[in-house]
Length: 386
Ligand SMILES: Cc1ncc(COP(=O)(O)O)c(C=O)c1O
Image (cartoon, rainbow, N blue to C red):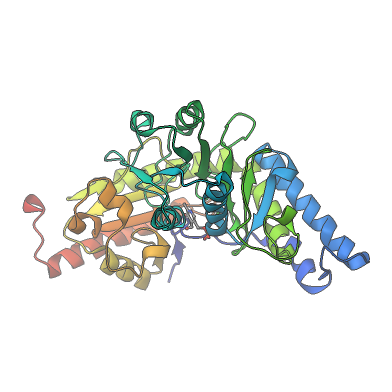
């Protein structure tokens, strides 16, 4: 049976060249970078190089990067760390479509007495900068809005949101876990104070990420121990992971424009062909949108059943975020966009990568109509009254 992986917003396949760079640091060069001997020096040199590689991709100084265990930790460090450093019960502003790694931290801070404003989005998942302007006030310490959405791929108007936040004296953080190496993010021109990335969305290893902290931005550490990462993230560093993050970032960045062109054309084919079927709708605006994301509402079909049937045919897809796949309620992103529970439960997310081919898309378009009509038959679906 053919196997097609279209769940690249959940995670991506590790590039084999990235793995080749990581393996020596698991097997032979296993030193602790804080050790003074030659094996420690090897690990320290590998980490220095990876930090320079990531900095070159982000257009920042190596000293502005803190390696973390992934996007979740980077988001937590950014948001809680800024609020802690401010020394007051200031307000946080975020959006209704953030990943739970952001939303849940904001709610936890709210429980600790920090006022919280959650900005609404339009039917495509976009934040209106006018809403941010109206919500701003002197009490706002931090605004956190993601670069691109993990469910529907919507790209937010970061420049405008940053300008508004700064004009009111607030810091700006962006969760760029989905956007990193899929859209231009150059910290010389993008004036965000903090930005989170994760390696496993860019064909790097799982369990490693980074937080960019612009020089001079006040952020307090959340964990305590040895002085690693300038005291921001004490713990012996994950050298193979960090090496993998640096190599994956350089590779993904260098192929970004070409990959985006190819993925956009395959994605557009998927969108056009799926929308030719009765009772199908695209969730999220066609543009601005990540080139690798297509997200549909398919009337009369339960998303989970659809994913399981597709999986039986070798197609790996998803309904929404992998982190919420086991939750009984539908994606908060889709309900924030105005979908009813029923509509949000009729979801199909197809996430592409540079490995996706025309043949993969052809196979999906051969199987998908069969599966949809079988599922609808079971439910006596009639597209005219959906
Ligand atoms: C937008 C977004 N933020 C944060 C995360 C969490 O990243 P990690 O899995 O590296 O902790 C994810 C992962 O799905 C994501 O899509």
